[in-house]
Length: 89
Image (cartoon, rainbow, N blue to C red; front, side, top):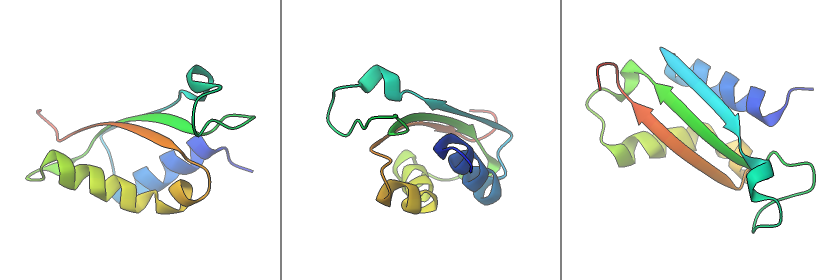
């Protein structure tokens, strides 16, 4: 079975065809905090560059990523830190 990080990466690659993508599990840094769960997989940082973001503002980019990851957010993904850019930014 795929980890949450692998599922996040697969969904983002399918939707955004990024030229650069990094998905980092930061759950261990948040142990004991709100939303943290035993076993982790609750807090992630996503750094992604995609031509799909050209002409989109920061909020629209964030909303597009959240929509793509809706199933993960509904099933235990608590926090998502996003660094999103278009090529050349």
